[in-house]
Image (cartoon, rainbow, N blue to C red; front, side, top):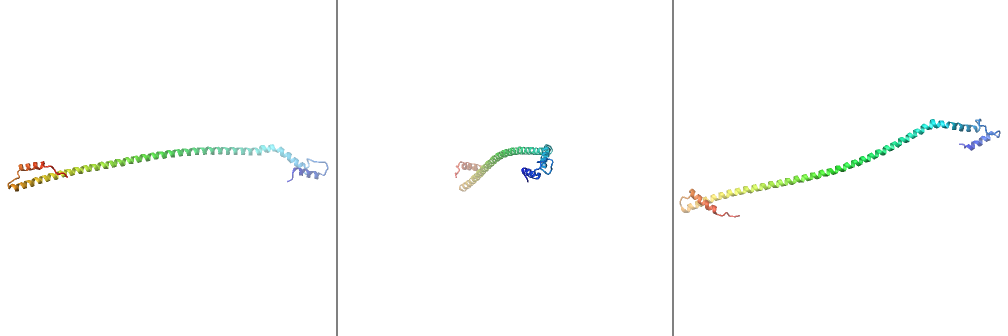
Length: 186
């Protein structure tokens, strides 16, 4: 592309020294001048008709981008706040779960202790019942042995005395004597 100086020099050479620059001669430097004059005259109209709407559209686009950035920042802040709230609630839920777990452990320990105590009490009752049954059976056995001793004593006395010993009086007398005997300790 030719520069403005080169174009002027070329036009001057074509004119051939005959009178200078003719601005109305389209073949000479005047075409370039008129192009610039028309361009500069049309520039305000082009600015208003073409560049104005383009500038307005670019400004609107910039404004929309700024709004979108602002909304994105606000959404990010809301997301961070929601995340922090969720983390707080999660921490609270963990604390509450730990508390429930501790309570459940305490209740299970109490239940185990109660069952153990109940089992011990039941075994103690069974032991006491068995001891009472043993003592009752022992008393029955001792009574049976005493009766047998009385019968044996009477039989022995009858054999020694060769007479009829066995009346109710004799039986009572021997029972009293056997009852006075001290029991043998084990």
